[in-house]
Amino acid sequence: MYELLKHTHLTLILIAVVLFLLCFYWRVTDHKNAQKVIFKKILLHTHLTIVVIGLALMGVLQINPFDIQNYWLVEKIVAFIGYLILVNVALREKTSKGMRYFALVGAFAWIVYIGQLVFSKQAILLLG
Image (tube, rainbow, N blue to C red; front, top):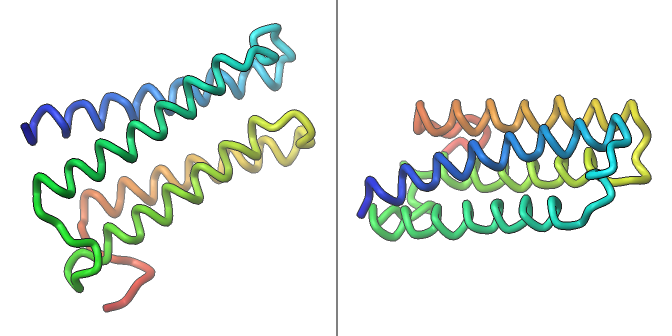
């Protein structure tokens, strides 16, 4: 069960990042697909599924994020929320072009930070 959840989680993360890049490209180039709501809904549901599968992984592995050795997981959740906010800023219609690029770089910075947390399993900001 763990392997299935882990691989599904990682695959959905890859799909979400690729779809975000595609939607961002469409938004910047004023492609006709940028106006279609279906792609935003697919991205939203992909993010929600990532959260649900992440919670299932926590349950299967019996990880409590509020134990002192698991503070990295709390940081990961906060970083994912930061990523979601920047994705929404980057894809919003009324955002200026410069701010969109800033949000794109920021979103990828959060992804790198999440990857660092996952591989090290060490809290960086929350000192416990």
